[in-house]
Amino acid sequence: MKIEDFQDILFEKEENGIVTVTLNRPERKNALSALTLLELWYALEHAEKDKKIKVLILTGQGDAFCSGGYFSQDALKGIPKKHLNEVNWKDLTSKKLCLKFWDFTKPIIAAVNGLGVGAGFNIPVLCADFTYASEKAWFGLYMIKRAVIGDMGSTLLLPLLIGFRKAKELFYLGNKLTAQEAEELGLINKVVAHDELIAYSKQQALRLMPPKSPTLALKLMKKSIHTYYRALIETHCDLENEYWLKCIRNKDFTESLNALKEKREPNFK
Image (tube, rainbow, N blue to C red):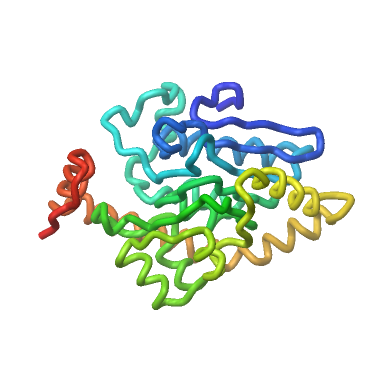
């Protein structure tokens, strides 16, 4: 897929080596459809191959970073026919994209400009190298409210980041976290004034490229940190996919979707 064919994201290169990838579906709070996931994969592919790109910044358009997965009957809408065979409907936990993030050799900075829920939590917290959040941002793992489990390797990685007790609290209860609380837990690097978020992220990006940072050493540093965990994530995503399939076949999942549609609290059995 070519950059000019992107519909759900913006891919903006600068002469200084920074590329900013923006989730560009503000009307649905940048929820990720099958098309969005595919475009993100190709954005990483293009950025990896482009030697002029040194750092990738990921952010969202409007007042949201990302509201998670986009559940819709028109899930195939917009996907070019020649790319339909690249969508694996059994990959319910976005293993393909998760591993693409973990294989990406250049620094990724997530600039979280608003709400980050589900994948909007996992990508900046678990897939980015640095995460800066607007003072207006907030986070949530609401999978339990949708009657499914964590995805993108989160059920493996989150306990490693913040410990089992706190991770279980976030997973089991689906509590909302302010940006300040996320920083205190060590989930993000820093809370930044909303109007300064992108400028600050770009300032930090410049510190991660020549002449201030050696390209090869940084690349190998990232690879050495990622290699062991990447192997674990690949296996663990298979387990998450297996459990996701069980969840979506359960009546509680249907109830969660009905409740979402009817704008009420679900009544699980």
